[in-house]
Image 1: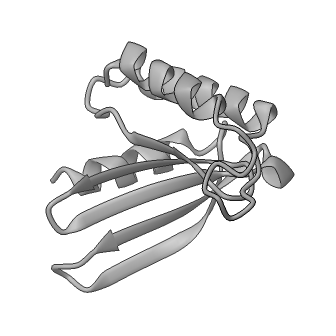
Image 2: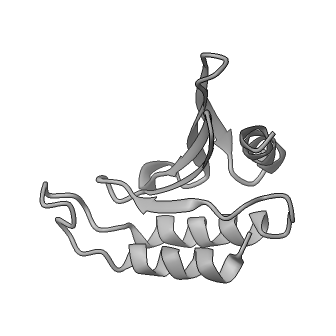
Length: 120
């Protein structure tokens, strides 16, 4: 992962104004941005983790996603669940979809395994 690029993208996303989507979206929550920064910094220590796409959600959260060919993995960080994240993994070739939650600190291995599955 190019950590500098990821953190700069996160910085730009964090500066989005309220109503950034013209549908009354919330501005990115500073606490969620902080958790995303910590998560990106931790993930960057693993050389096998590529730089994710980084987006704001309409509710003030941050979404990280990785995509290659028919595989897609996203992680959503929300203000109401700072210690947990939602995830979605999809493999369109195998017609498989998995979703759930993981504890950000204690289940990093789960997160990195899903990311690796995207690039296999």
